[in-house]
Length: 187
Image (tube, rainbow, N blue to C red; front, side, top):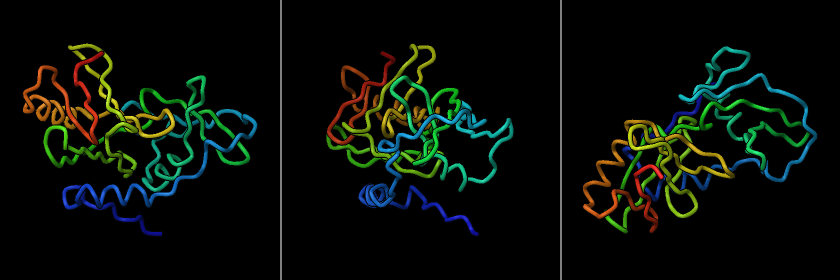
């Protein structure tokens, strides 16, 4: 079966990106409460690579599929969940990586859309905030994706954010998206 072609982010408007994000129907994992069945023998590395039994999963379509049934539990654990089973999955940092960004507008009117390593799109805003952890020497920027799941913002994308934040010239370096301001300094 051929893998679906991912659209080129640079050729899409933010309105088109929002439409693509809305069209993606995710399973209602938050409504599924099966018994815990054990460990999946899967791990998501800090760089976003998914592993099964120590070997990288080489099929991007499989990674995308597994990413749709990923859930974060109230105790902080990550699980893969279906209506009939729940399996632990190890996550080294964040389960997703924001690998590309597209910006439209400036200042308070700006909107920032991100492509994740799974091909999903997320537009930063009040429902999908950006945050920076770590310290000034080693900031760790994250984007909220859904249900307690975050994407680590890849270093080149973070540099784009910083460049944008510094260009705005405000007292606090940061960026606007969807009417919300996000400081770019580690908290």
